[in-house]
Length: 89
Image (cartoon, rainbow, N blue to C red; front, side, top):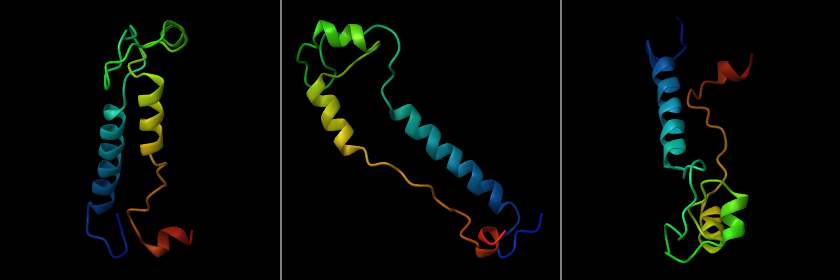
């Protein structure tokens, strides 16, 4: 496949790298399924019963969940190819 200035297989490598990055990000997220924890996984404070009933599989108290949400920055799309001809089509 003609890739402009890129070497053979570069596009496939970039796609695989993007998929690998996204899978790693998803695996790092806490799971929200199964049984909820009675105590927070980070600070060990009790998680209120109403929160455990509302969110299945909750593992963090409200304070720790809020702190984690503030740390997570929304990600933008990345054009790994960086080729102008791909943007002109």
